Image (cartoon, rainbow over all chains, first blue to last red; front, side, top):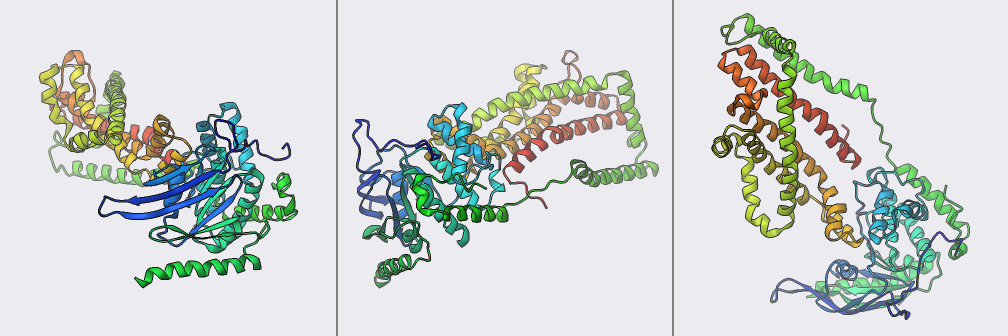
Length: 268
Length: 302
């Protein structure tokens, strides 16, 4: 482990010390909003296990509740029914917007996450530099957020998420607001970091190609309410490219299914 | 740049591809980073100071003309030179700075006390729903009540004393500082609060690391307004609360000028009050505010 730049990570173990076979378990989860009577069912009986080290993409059209589901897993909201377990502690979460604090420098943003995790002051600076290096932003420690490009901001946000030292990284369309070239590069970076760190990733997107490019498993959600429509295992070896024929073939298949799901909503 | 450090065991399959990405990324970063250049300090200051100086010169010229053509008798409308002489005389007597200091120290003390009270009050109103529902509207309403209206009440409570002056200052400044903080908290993007919670900034840590820094621009605007209100309230109080053992502040100086019917004296006192108010705003609040906004990328260069 000396060659890698990471100090992580113990296997996902519960307090008893026994190894848990999942990094996240979403167990028959339903969620509805609003008052009884005028309720809106957003998620209906969703069950997904994310294995330790697994990369799962949640795919769906708008209204499928994928962001809601991610909020539930992050613990920002509670399910109406069912249970969610994340044995590795509080998951890290990345948003579509970088959500970095503009009153802190890039490095200080990361150090704040370290501090809140309980890392002693003496180690924070070095750890932040290490994380910045991991996302290839060596030397950006003192940069203000507004001085960074969109892609750099998302990489700092990624470093901040990694600073939480969580077993599970939740990503809510983190690259949706980036231009195509930058997004492509960040796909490569995310794949690299994921493989270096053993993280489990639950990645939400509406971009089929992105899902196939990144994930080991793609879960398609239908809309209103969100329900698991189908799952695919993606066996294409990494590193993949978004232009690969195998990626394209599977994307076409999944897109067909996704369109079918969307069409159903026009019929009634 | 960082092309060689990433050869961790897991990435060997990528081989040289990883170096390519690093190079590509470095190129993208370079292309998309904004270079913020700042003008030399002196030139900025000069270009900013010029227009107001011209405006002041025009006002003085018009004033001098009005004096020259005696629009009003000279004892009612003295010339700028008369006012300058009156200031000079007090300067030579050695009393001028002590008048200014009496008022500024009172203003500063009252302001600091207002900051402590206003901040605590603002945090409670911003964070506790029931309190906000109860006193939120009253607090914003108090802002429109001229604090000079408190002077008679304060005199009845405390007589002609420092306590009266400070009471009026506090009643003037506390609501605007509290309101500024409430507005600052309300304007925080919910995204920061969510992001804060996901990295574990909850409870007091959330207030300290997310809520307060995020609300800082609104809070500083509130402080600025709070200072303006303290200064105004102080002058109102000093004008009315006039007792020998209280010492002479600028307000009392102004009132003495009126009693003596000395218009040059009155105008020079008004001028001093204005200069101190503007000076503190320019020397203390404006730089702090600019610094905060610039560090957050909120100060747009035209």
